[in-house]
Amino acid sequence: MEKEEIKQKLKEMLVERLQLKISPSQIADDKPLFHPPEGSGGGLDLDSVEALELVVGIEATFGVTVAAGDYKNEFYSIETVADFVDNLMKASL
Amino acid sequence: MGILSVHSLGTSDILARIPHRHPMVLIDRMEEVRWGVSGKGVKCVTYSEGFFQGHFPDEPIFPGVLIVECMAQTAAIVLSDPDGTHSGRGRIPRYLAKINSLKFLRPVRPGDQLEIEVAIRRRLGSMVVVGALARVCGEEAASGELVLAG
Picture 1 (cartoon, rainbow over the protein chains, first blue to last red):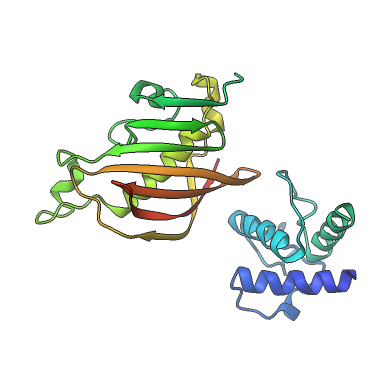
Picture 2 (cartoon, rainbow over the protein chains, first blue to last red):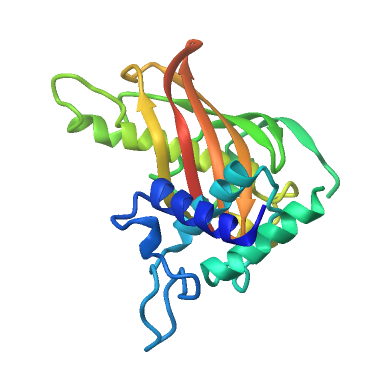
């Protein structure tokens, strides 16, 4: 799966599972998904419970398994989550 | 350590594993505990419990939110340290983070014995997803999924 396709599927999955009041195209690739650092702005401002929903959504959408762990860096933005998913899919081949 | 399961736990064993105290210790007995995996909590409902004075004066019903609390406490015991040592308490999730699709199928009344089966479905960081099913006399009273946080 191409990375652009992964990113698009991620955005659609987030909007659907988290019932976001925006369209997938309004989610930027490089903005923080979770509580953004002071002054950076523009993120989705997701919370820790929604992080769990993201993990469950990744598994359901891409057919991969996300092991227990701390994914603060991997879950920074759509771009980094897409890399994370891409690596998981390649590892499961 | 190294104990994988235990047949039954009584009040003193439960108090050694969870931080709750009177009047919030709801589980009377634990059965079929597989540490970190699954277990069954037993709650004997009796009219002398204080909340029945007001819930409700003309029809005593065990509050649904307390069924949720029974599920959370059963899960906390399953997640506790098998040794029941004080040092193990830090691992128990103390907070309710989310309630997923919980349904209540029959009222629970004084005299009922609630049997609450829980299964740990997944963990992520400090979050634990718990599947729970509460029965009275084999009949489903409530079921659903909770997310607990440490």
